Length: 160
Image (tube, rainbow, N blue to C red; front, top):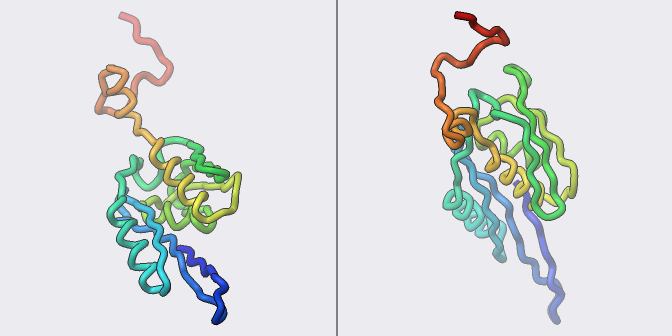
């Protein structure tokens, strides 16, 4: 997702080290983020992808989108995620797009509201996805029976 080069000035010149931010997902609701640092790019990427796979989490999805609108915050990064109708696609930039696509979300509207720091934007997106709850999960925690036919009345009250 993002590779950063850092230089340390020593007696013989500059010594470079690298850090890598990686997003890993199974495109079926599981996604993880990893950060790795090393003296070579390949090693930093390997460490980051290992951390990303180790830290994968299951997200609540609704068909190809998310169940409801949410805002995730981490540090200075704020990310707004909004469900979209089928066929819209992923309307998101940079880090948000990487996380959302890795999770397997096909239709979503996203906006980064705060910091443009890659790490904070990605972590804010993860926070937003963690906050998602499907309708049946919410009803279950409230102790309300869930109807399998998909809905209640459409505003009409039955009289007997």
